[in-house]
Length: 160
Image (cartoon, rainbow, N blue to C red; front, side, top):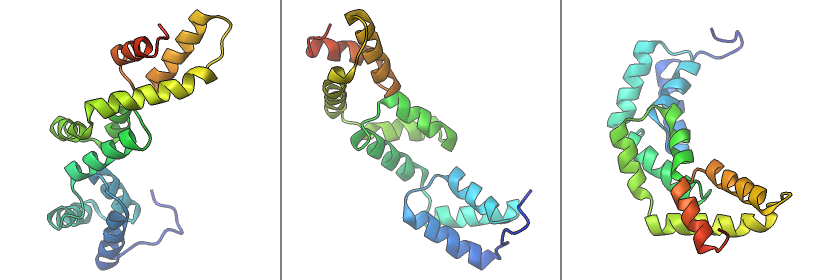
């Protein structure tokens, strides 16, 4: 159900608005579909517009996934697990996810982990060393890094 005061768009208005929406940043098909539905469009019209947008390359799932992964790993320094969880609501295929994760350079990924670990270790407080390490590892796990890489980082930083 739509709120009573929401405007209902005709096809041309919706087409222009959704193109502007797609130009702002990369979007997944799910985001675009949800936006079109919020415009009050019928399901058949939503499908038609979505096909148009895909053909005109306004929407490209692989391009979206690659940009998403690149941004989260290089700017926010998220780990692969957290990135994959954030991509889950976008309903991307396994093929596209695999292609997107090729954007991650393993060396830079590990350097990101070391950088986060070096900054976080002095800020981690606990009653004893064991609890401090557990809190520290839990933080790195929440950032989406794999436990084997965390163990390796602890050894490299001489914290283990």
